[in-house]
Length: 144
Image (tube, rainbow, N blue to C red; front, top):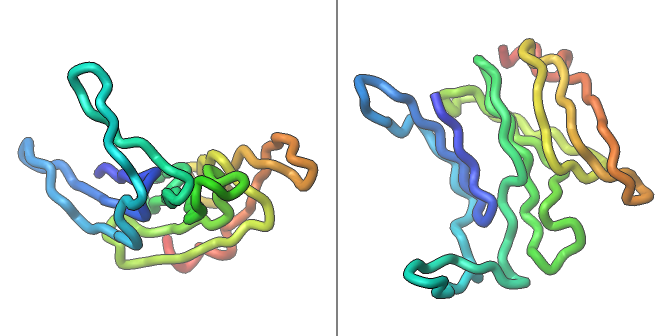
C-alpha cells in the first residue's frame, strides 16, 4: 500500500500494488490546487505558489493499520501556513475516518507502530521548536 498527500491541495490518495500494477484504493479530495501560476525554468515548467494558495497536507505517516495526515488548510499568506493543527486518521480502505485537533502548530509527525502515540515536531506558544507526544490509544482503540 502507498499513501500520498498533497502540499498544495487537500488531496489524499491511497494505492495498492498488485501484479505489477498500481491501483487506486481510495481517495479523499477536499480541494484541488488553486492560485498557482506556471513559470518556465530552462526547458521545464514549474508550478509556483502565490499568497492565496492554500496549503493542504504538511505531512503523512502510516502504520500497518492506519494512515495519519497532518492538515493545514491555511493560505500561504497566513502565519505558519506550512504547519497544521488537524491530524486526519483513516484506515487503509478509507472506511474509518477520525480528526484530532491540536492546540499547538505541528510541522512533522510520526506514529508508534502500535498506533498508541503520535510524535510531532511543533512550535510552542513562544514560537520555539519542540517535540510533543500525544497518547491516542484510548481514542483509536475501536478503530484498530
